[in-house]
Image 1 (cartoon, rainbow, N blue to C red):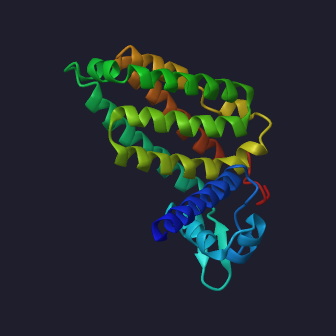
Image 2 (image 1 turned 90 degrees about the vertical axis):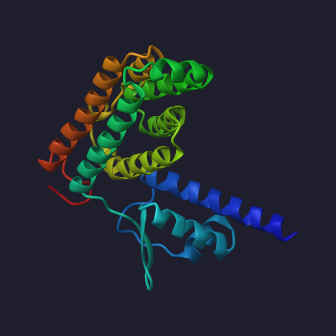
Image 3 (image 1 turned 60 degrees about the vertical axis):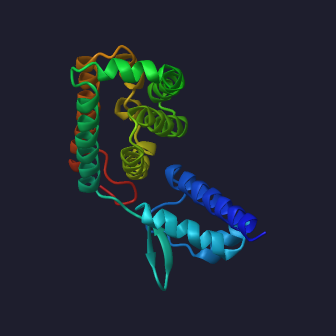
Length: 238
């Protein structure tokens, strides 16, 4: 009975954490707006314990900040934070794919062993690219996160996959307020998912590196634009 209760509470904790993460990514929970365990518990009609645990989980993931006396708020990342996220992501991805495409035939072996999984990744890639080209931010975020997580699983290192997933969630949390207010949003949504999965499926190391270099350059270019104040930070004025 005790074990069953633990599973139920942990599941509820995960559900609440996932729902709140979606609220943050959708821009409905915004930085500098404070909320308490009690408010969230009442919103979802649940007890305080799984809510408190979910909020601490999200804090540990770097998405929330807590104040002992005032409650929680969404962390507000800076452009410098975002640039560091892109740099860290690029360094880790580069290391992962250099190891896979090392000229020893490992890439072809890996692709052969994960051919079925790559079919699912390819579907995620098509949906993500379509959403990016259409400027559909809500659809894109979900498919982009799933695409990279599934692709990371193919690489076979769960620790790196989790680290990169956390970076991507943080990058989306930073980006969403800017993108929602940008009339040119489609120009700043990366849509190279299909090119990347096709290059990996073909075990073409040069093509993979070219797509990943473009992915990183895209992130740095957008950081430069934001650092120049174009567009200004939403809610901060010009």
